[in-house]
Image (cartoon, rainbow, N blue to C red; front, side, top):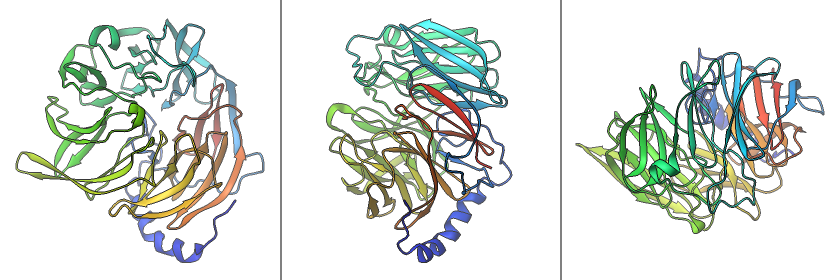
Length: 420
């Protein structure tokens, strides 16, 4: 389906904005996808030259293979793809050949679900592996954290976050993806005095461990507030800002939902507005962060309940933030103005609940029913250029894009596609 209303007028209005966003990635067209959300952890890619006219059966398939159940994200480094899946009572970290899909190595470990874990949506890994220079960081659904040798899969160090640090045990399992900061790996944990922990990447020792915030499902991100680096984490009932070097609390702001489900990633803008969104009765808010001396001030600029991002990725382009909005009921493809909170549009039946990437002035959309689409974002909708059904199980994993190669997966299969 194509959203054509005022397409010429709105496309012209967005050309300058999109060109400005794209120019930020110039010269890095072959950047790798080493973490949740890609190079900048914001689900955008500097890739160019993506085709918008696909055959009816979709873009060219480079390879496709079966893979065990999981919603774990995909990381790509040079010639290798990394992800996770579950088989029986074990979890598996797998390294695949990026050109063929063949298994390079696997590491399997026992992973009994922790008490109280609800298996209604599958007891399978949910977080995205983190690629460092010579090692790989993974965290399973029961909060077992591993550091593996990237070439062989050998375990270099590990932590059981529940047993060692009394980590929060979310109803749907651990889902946060680790963040690298200089020589540390920063992880939301949620235990008393262990709300967030920074581990030394070399040996797994604790660099700092601070706060009592219970954990949720979202992942930490690094932002710059008026020249100061800060870690933002959406925890169970609040969004917080931390000093990445010491873990000091710089600010916090309430953001509580029904059922304590904070799962979507916040979105940061160069206007110092932080977009925070959740489903389950809460909706979205825009927070303006400013520094005054050594203090960070937080002002809630707006709040509204029509845009509610459940767990999918949200993309900011200019002043608009695009995302699937909804929880377990009707889902709308929507956009909200980051500065004002005004809803720009809300459409049903364009796509089901979806994960988004942004590259080459286009949105790459993978919905939960396995449909992949490429579309141009407009100020009052999206223009879908091509769409194909490629996956047949629940697809809740955000795609990964390296150059013109797109990696997608569902709860039983993984594919590499050529978008050139």
